[in-house]
Structure formats: C-alpha cells, structure tokens
Image 1 (cartoon, rainbow, N blue to C red):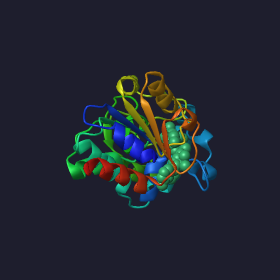
Image 2 (cartoon, rainbow, N blue to C red; image 1 turned 120 degrees about the vertical axis):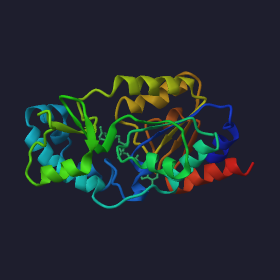
Image 3 (cartoon, protein in one colour; image 1 turned 90 degrees about the horizontal axis):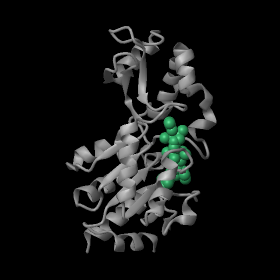
Length: 253
Ligand code: OAD
C-alpha cells in the first residue's frame, strides 16, 4: 500500500526528489557498505580518510586500489531500479536524483533513456580522478592502472597528486552541490529515500529536512532505517521490484 500511497500523491505538478544509496546498486553487483558482507566488514574505513590521503598518499592509493576492485571490479550495469527512476524522470514524474553513490549508474540509465533529470552525485564519481593541485579531472581507469603498476601516488603532468574524484571521510562535500541538494529538498513535495541506510551525514538529514518543510516522505529499503518513524510511506521491498511497480502505477493511469 506504501507504493500506491506515493503514486496517488505524485503528479507532474508535484516536485519529486529521490535520494539514493548503495542499495539501489546492490542488484547490479556493486556491494553495499554496511550490513552482512558489506565493504566495511572487509576494509577499515579509517584507511580511506582525507587525513590519510594528505599524510600518506602512497599508502592511501595502495589501499584504494583494493577498495576500487572490491566495489567496481566486476562489470556492472544499471538495473531495473535505476531504469525505473530514469523512466519516471523522462515521463515528468521525477525532478531530481540526489545520490550518495559514486558508481555512475544513474547517469548510465538516464543516457540510455534520454532522460535529462538532474543527477547530483553528492559523494562524487569514482570513475574519475582529480588533480589536487590544478583541479584537472581525468578518466580514472588509466590512472588506477598506473598506480597498480607502482606509481604511488599517481601524479598529474603539473606535479600534483591525483585523488579519486570522490568525497572521502573527513572531507567537505562540494558546497555548490550540497546547497543545490538542500534547496531541492526544501522545494520537494515528495521526497523518496531509496536504498540508503540513512546514517551518513549530510545526506542522512535530507529526508528530515524535507519532512520539516511538509513533504511526503517515502522510504524504499529492504530493512528499517532511522527515518522510517517520520516517513509517510515505507516499503521494505527490493528496489528492483518497488521502483518498476511505482513507475508502472504512474504510467497506467
Ligand atoms: P549502506 O551500505 O550504508 O546502506 C545500503 C542500504 O541499502 C541498506 O540500508 C540496505 O538495507 C539497503 N539495500 C540493500 N540492497 C537493497 C535492495 N536490493 N533494495 C532495497 N534496499 C536495499 O549505503 P549508503 O547508505 O549508500 O560514503 O551509505 C552511505 C555512505 O556511506 C556511502 O556513500 C559511503 C559510505 O561510507 C562515502 O564513501 C563517503
């Protein structure tokens, strides 16, 4: 009934914002961070902080190569959950995707469907690296290969050190991105929290901010989240079932 409730409130005039986390990419084979067999069961979060990157960039990169393999080592593509969100966007029912994921899968799904709904990657994009001196962004794979071949840390032509183009623990999110995410959240009539444990700030606060300004809050997650208590509709269903179902409820009417 949760999805029917949400579908009943969504129309093309409503501002609908989705916040996604690792759970939406789990069915694509990208592991989640928390929960059984999560990435943080196998890796020490403390090795991937911004402080470590600054003080020991070679050691950081050596460990990051392993983390990158664990996260993105297998070929992966968008699943029915990403596709349903892209379809909702293309059909005029979804106004923005805010994602904590760095896997680029929302962009792939949107490209495949010619959907132009804005996607805000709050934690950056792990397919790229960025020079910490001159700011140049580059495709990540060749740089990761150089690092794996022993260039630790890999450096830019300008001499600066490359960093994966993601937000590390202890590092600020891009001010412009979080500001835009906050204003979309404040404008939202319906705010959907999808496949995220909703425990990492500042993303975790966004659903509560949306609730404060009167939005209807929907949660899609296999498990309970700390936000379920303030949510109007909670669906403990796999994203690959819930999101196509929501999309088809809207398409059928
Ligand atoms: P988590 O790993 O914390 O949470 C994933 C959530 O997805 C859990 O609540 C699962 O119950 C849910 N889930 C898993 N599979 C699902 C499925 N098929 N359908 C529905 N729900 C499913 O991931 P995030 O909340 O994204 O930060 O984690 C937030 C941040 O913590 C990440 O961006 C990362 C991490 O440390 C950085 O790297 C900065």
